[in-house]
Length: 353
Image (tube, rainbow, N blue to C red; front, side, top):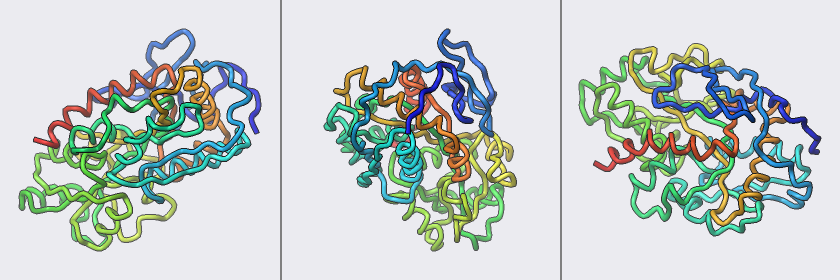
């Protein structure tokens, strides 16, 4: 159940972070911050951070009943798994259930096109994936929403992307993959989830940085993307570290991770950049709310989920599952979303050229 927390207490291993630069390789970076907060960027393994919450005192009456969090993808993918961690610790913090409602369709578009129809009382929330909601409205037609329609109150984790091949592939290294693509321009197939999603952007950014031309094959979700790779129906795929955590990833083999530095979870996995390819990419997850939600309710919802992310154990649980947990608080979310938009909007436009 919820316990009182003193202002300025550091989260349980979760940096309060908002640093997102176009070439974010200089982490950790301690930047000038408002007097009410020190904000420290994430640097590989989770580091301690101090902060003072921008949120008002939690309304003791929220939540008084179960809260629904809609996830626009099916079970087992990185969006769903991250929501399950919130679900577990939400119950411990509030004593109320967080009900995960999977609503797959359109590569997430089904949920995001409906999120502003939710009741604005804090009991109907939607999981938001960035930069997915920047890319998709531009790169895919008829999704039913725009980036400006998406409102978020807290960013709580990120996941690096990995380039993987079937376990029995003759390709053993990233260098060999690039050589194969150079030898047969446009012939090497690379899978990913959806059109205009995070995997699609990783495919584009890697092609550009490596100077290769491969064929992107979109799949409905992470599970079908991985299944195609495991079955050898595609030569490679952009997927997520979460799929290889805790002994997962049967039938697949990672070549490199698109992270700034090697991950503690996979210390032998090289980064794309250390192999000489100037490319870094990840995805972020946020708590989304309907546009009609008043600011005081938004702040209260944000504060509750911030408290969830402060719970002892959640950071380590998420790291072991392949995530990079950190927090972007309410007053910084809009600015960080704007920076992500500025970076990925040109990518989205390139995907439709």
